[in-house]
Image (cartoon, rainbow, N blue to C red):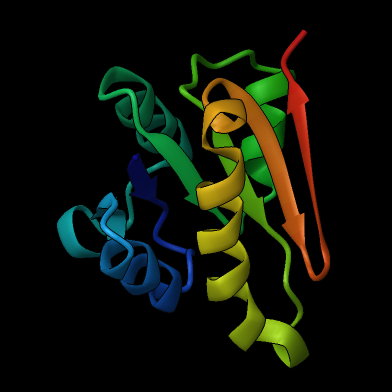
Length: 117
């Protein structure tokens, strides 16, 4: 699958998805300090699912109704950070078809995939 990792995304997640064979571009490597609107627009234009830890993308998706190929919001506390990589790889492996166009919240032990209205 194709992803764009927002600058605030833990880079260990980027490495884990790349190691699993996914095409992952990282804002931190290419265009640090890009605005959220630019990041979500770029992901949509390239048909990449955005991976972020920034809740502002929920606002952009639902309130501002920004175009999106899909968003994965990672919500792991510091005490569970090591499990985030494994959780993301498992999510993509088992739910790839559902992620496109959806808004997914991933937390320790659960993932919630919703469709935009």
